[in-house]
Length: 101
Length: 101
Image 1 (tube, rainbow over the protein chains, first blue to last red):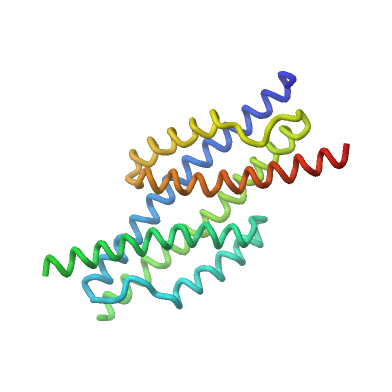
Image 2: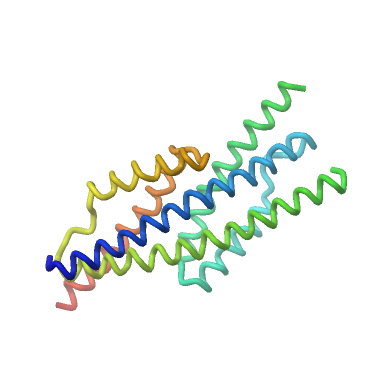
């Protein structure tokens, strides 16, 4: 690898590292919001999952992915990983709420 | 559900939808960077994977997750999903480069 190529690789990796820091912080903020949703749902004794809302989110993200040049299948896969985690949190919050009551 | 509770849920969902739009756009930008890395690696005939770099990325993200209140195991899972996709892209770029040469 020439030093020009090596420098280009290092520059791209620095951008990727910055983007990853953004991803971690925005995901942390997303889970702050979904934990608040979980607490609201637990108080109102609403179910942890909401298939209609999830379907809407998937459709919206696929459209956003198309417009930004991201593979829509990857966007859906990625959202599914997040939603599975959120449902787990909601179930824990609901369980704790029932045991507290 | 009272209307105050319902409004709080709608407000949180509006924030989640905005955050998801950020996630899609920042992921699209991350893949723009990794595709450029893939092209550089293909030109220099470098392997698609780099276990040392991946290990560094995981360790760094786990620390960032801890500092931002995100579950480090989730951060690692999430990065693994992205890296698997990136390696797939790199292999496609390398395959096309070999067939073009």
